[in-house]
Figure 1 (spheres, one colour):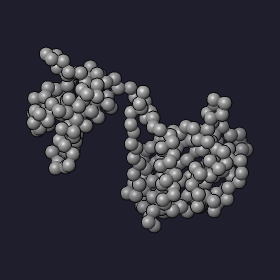
Figure 2 (spheres, rainbow, N blue to C red):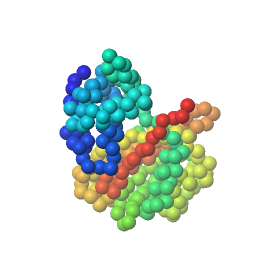
Figure 3 (cartoon, helix red, strand yellow):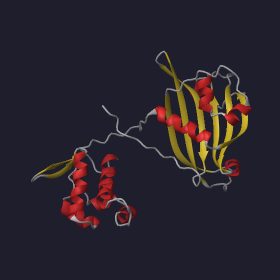
Figure 4 (cartoon, helix red, strand yellow):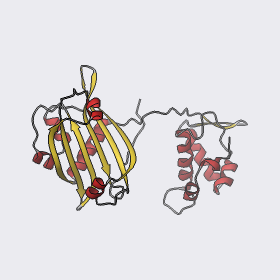
Length: 260
C-alpha cells in the first residue's frame, strides 16, 4: 500500500491541524473513514500502524489509537495482534439511497419558505428526450411549468418541469401560491420513487439573466425524475430540470444507516 498521506490533499492534511471545536481524533477518524468508504483504501489493505499515523499526520499516538479504535468499532477495519490492522469494508459503487418521505418533505418545505415567480404554465408537446422519458406519443402533451425561486429578493433556482398524470387543469396562479407536491397529492398523483442527477454547467445568457449572474458562470444542475407505481410497474410522471446559483443554494444530504 502506498503511504497513507499520498491519498489525501494538502487541504485535507492541513484541516487536521486547524483550531476547531471538533476533537482531533474524530477529524483523523473521519478522514480515514471516508477514504475507506469511497474505496480509496481497498478491502484487505493493511492500515498504517499507530506510530506511522502519528508521524504522518503530526498527532499523538493516543490520538491515532483512538481514531483506529473508532474504525474498528464500526467494523471498517480489523485489528489483530502481530498481524496489524486491515480494512474489512467492501466498497461497492452504486446510487445513494435515502428515505423518500423525508426528501419530499424537505423539497416542499423549501417551496413554502421561498418566493416563486411562474413564467410559464401550459400544456405543450415536450422536446424529444423528455417525450421519450415520459413514454409519450408523438402528438401527446404534458404540463410545462417554468419558474424562478427567490429568497430575500435574490433568485437562487430556475425550474423547468414536464408533468403527466394530473386529472384536472391547474392554473398558473395556483403554482404561485401552492407547492407542486401539494398540488400533486391533491390530484391523487403519488410519487413512489425519485432519481436525481447533479452536475455543473455554465450559465447560458437566459439562465444568467434569470439568476442574476454572468453568462458562463458556474451553476449547479439538478435533474429530478419522479415516478408513480401502478400494479407493480413504475412510470415516470414528472421530469424536472433545475439550475441553482451556487452562491445562494447548497444541496445537502444527511443520510443514516438503515436499521435492520
